[in-house]
Length: 398
Image (cartoon, rainbow, N blue to C red; front, side, top):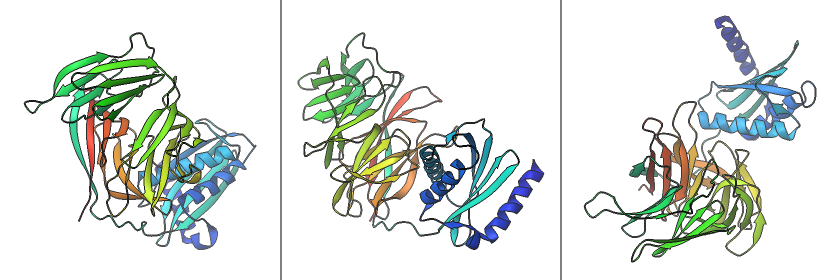
């Protein structure tokens, strides 16, 4: 094993030495990954399964490696290839770098046939973002044994939505105390990976669940009335954009049928979550699609680019750091590590990270807007077994 590793490092060093003449120039990381995927799909018999191993020897982080992997896998499938952990075609892809370029080096083997392909792109500074000092303030607001679907804050009170009920809390002495609860419809068979959302409407609220919509009020006391309905969920992004989206009742995602604020219906394709940001004065919608990439849409909800390397939960805010709104996105941790949440600005159809990511205590199970400058994140803590709700607030620097 040690000899094999040393041999591969020697090969890689030699390849990088000749990179200027050997590598195919690409525009960016996604383009390089797609170029290698197309070569891989044409190696061996068409449709033959491929096993792929990745490693990172560059200064880029795990998010960029995940982005390359997502772009490669999507392009491989588009070209007629397919992935399998046990396959006749074995591929090893290394993300590396030279002083002038980032490099993807692929070593492919099919029986006695071996190939090496290289794709590179120029090193460039990060996208310009005039929002120095942006940070995320994380505050634990509630934790419990039962799953938390969403939390909302009507005035000085707190509403907690679970698979069985909606509970109203108050804190007359500084600590939250349960005041009233209203049960959700009994006997309803929820999907395995249940999602739910609370939306405040003054002193009233709506609770959206798969195939069920509830209306309620918190004044003068907690009331709740639910009915089976295919009514679309109202997705807000900070305080500047709204989207109506149909939820797939037996699944854990939206089926892709949406209606914009102008009343225009549009098919986007199935997605897990959506958020809006402003880029150069225009609204840009982002949707976390089922295949793992983030699809960008313009104000008319037409495709306008894509991103990779994010998790499936995104939420928008209206914090005006540097003149533009931010989007918060989950970033899955490496195997065994907890998720983190990162703030981004969208600049020239690319994601520019703002500040440092905030590490959570486990996997994020829900991410919803919570007021103009904050989001509500629900985490399932594997150590305690409890669900914890955090409010993350965007704090603008000087």
